[in-house]
Every structure is written in structure tokens, then in C-alpha cells.
Image 1 (tube, rainbow, N blue to C red):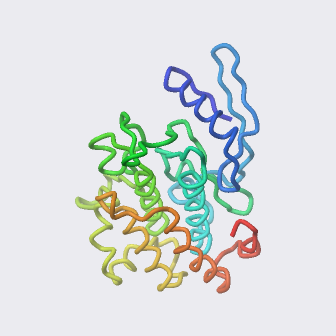
Image 2: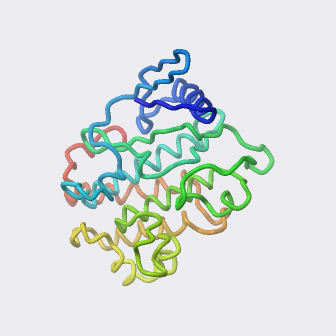
Length: 268
């Protein structure tokens, strides 16, 4: 359930109801109903009992860390969600606030994307961009969007790349408690992503070395492309999805996920 107030809250409420009433995908959280009574606004969503990806990666009271196979599957679920919004929704949808707190996990740790209050529909038919005021979350904003307000689907791709880096490293996008030079995750990671030894050094310690080095290097390469400073060098989500599918299948066959029994779902 979601309760919002104020002018921006009213806009977010209307956008979310409009989008989720007509967009249906196994990778998007389902809107079950809503209430608009005088000044009260309420959204009711399907239950996602395992909460947010943010909690499982960054909470101090997390119980069991996400294993490698589950992280890969979450990455693929999120990629398919954004691919659906960018390529299959009519008009196309730019999420504009994709981040770990907006990735929810069901009872089998399948991921679904939520919170479409800041989403934008359509784009300029000539150059594929929208001019808008900058909204979103620090650490996830694409550089060109943060500096000029020019929004494209590649803005979502950048945010997705940041989430991939969180899955790889276990670090938050911005952490001022880190040593100098390590405050901003993308700035710290990007120069290291071309060096295999450094990639292995920055892996989340919670994984305890339980991962395929080859697949991890491949996932790091995908993340590196997604967070390129220049939007034109970032891939489309339709390119990201087929790059991740073999990694998920590898993790399933090797049994590197606690939830491999659910990996044969039609979602894949």
C-alpha cells in the first residue's frame, strides 16, 4: 500500500494508476486496486513477502545474504522488466527512478519492478529524448540527465548498471563513510572493470567466493557498458537480456542458487 500527499504525490498517484492499470508483465509489481477519497490516496499492490533488494543487499540486520545464482536471476528479472517498458509498452515508458528499493522480491526471490510515480511515457520521435526537470535518486542518475534534463531509455540503462554494481559489490551507490576515492560507486568501480584481478577484489565479501569467476567477469562487463558516461555507448535492454540468460542457466545447472528449483519457471 502506498500513501502520497502534495502536488507531486497526486501526479505520482495518477501516473502509477494509469500505467499499472494497462501494463501487465510478470516482471512488474501488480496493482490490485486503489482508493481516491477526498485528500486520501491509496495504492494496493500484490504481496511481495521478501521485501526489497535494498534490504537484502544493504540492511544491517539481514539474515542470509543473497547467493550468486539468486543475484544473477534478479539481474535478469530487472532487465526483462525494463526491456518490457522500453520496447513493448505503447507508448514506451521510462521508469526514471530504477533502484534497489524499487525492486521487490516474491516468495521465490523472483524480482519485480515497482514505483512508477516518476515514470515518463513516450519520447521525441526524432531523437528519442524527453526534456524534463531532473527527478530521481542520487547515485542512480545518468550523467546527461542530471546535467541537462534530457531523458531517454538509456537513462534507465545507466540506473540498471548501478544496480548491477550493487549486486556485484554489495556496496551502496553513494557512501561518504568510505575512504576518499570510494564515495561514489560508479567512479570507484569503472576504472577497475577492465582488470580481471581488480574485478575479483571488489566482489561482495558476503558471497564468500561462491561464484563462477567467468560468469562474474561477464556480468561486470555488462555493468561496465551500462554505466558508460556517454549514453550512446550504453546497450539497449534488448541487448542486455540475452547476455544475462546464459549466465542464469549456468548458475542453475551448477546449483549455485538456493532457489534453483524455481529456475525452470516460464519467466525464463
